[in-house]
Length: 323
Ligand code: DGY
Image (cartoon, rainbow, N blue to C red; front, side, top):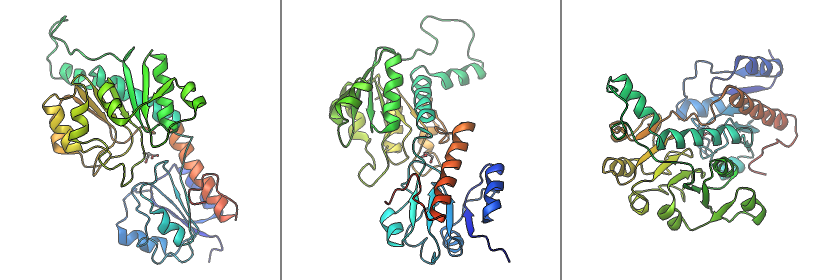
């Protein structure tokens, strides 16, 4: 029998990373990438000392009910709303995430969605593929909204929000933000961002970007009431989490042209997308890929593995959440 400690890798990862793990651990892997049911997850966690998981694995008291040997759950994700942190701490288990390594990649994608949404890129492509392009036209081609010299309003001014702000400066944009707490003067200066109330941000921004963590308090941060404050020419970008936006209210507002367009990387109940959103042409849809570059996904897996190894070696994991 193997003397190696047993770990779980709950989702498919890069084969080289898995091979490295197998040198030190007895690995229960899941390279077929099928998502465990809650019952399966509870069973999987009952016989291991460490687990690499992702947003698809809800780690709460019930998942941990039989996890008597478990020392660490390492999320391959910076957001950790799939963790019930008090329940994990109560079970004496360490919890970690993957900050920093995905900041720039995710901020880049926020910008990709800003541009694609304001300039109607996917809609234009569909239009060409459908054979509608018969001539260049001054007024009868898809006309968009400008990014340059517009006002971007960022809700959630953590690492990724600040990354969006710094990129916006290169476009000559005016940056306003709202956050639970105000940034230091030095940080505000570094991204030339002005703190405003959520209401002022919604009223004055040409483009609203959501980059805040999901929690009970941030649920439906944007619903019908908030959208009603926005300019009819404004765009809304969600690279944060599904549930921060009321997707049905958004679909209704987009249908009635209450705002110009939306760019969404995350959805309530994803991978299902509200069918009302699917009917609309003024929304750009992406399958939760803001951090999805070859390099960054590898860095996320590597950091999660560093966290797991540290915990199992009796050291402090580099990105411990429940210190
Ligand atoms: C993150 O890291 O939080 C991404 O959304 C992937 O889950």
